[in-house]
Length: 180
Image 1 (cartoon, rainbow, N blue to C red):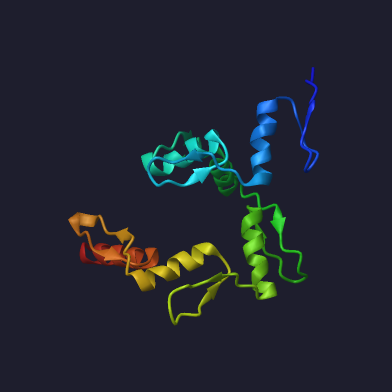
Image 2: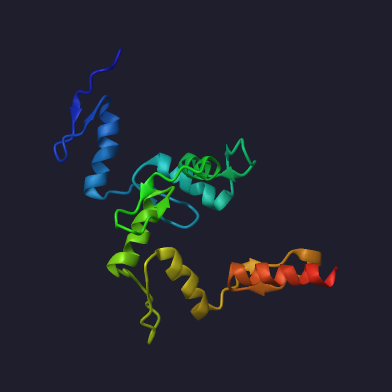
């Protein structure tokens, strides 16, 4: 038995069973964000989104991959991760002769920028006019300006720090070569 959806959004005509769900939905149109994080003061439209955000501060990862044992902070991230085990890549580039496919629609969207030349993420550092196809690429680039070394070697209490994950991986290989 399906309950009647009697609460209608007057902006996009989406229907809801409960008035509270309609009220939460309306914030997507108004931009209202009444829920605030006590740690970093970011604001959110629903208490549920705030609760999920809090996991970035607590490190809580309640969602477990039954295949490999990795843990995730959000069910959606786990679902995307599961595609790595199934090998499913349902999002295919529509450009003839490209043939690339992706497990996530967001990755296909980023890939499409390689065809269009769009680079919407711009470095705001003075006298730097580099642009990027993704926010992740911009964040990596910003380390060159800040000098933030986010990757630390934990082999034999080495504690050497690196700007880039690949540099850390190469460094770890040097530990293995020394021990051979």
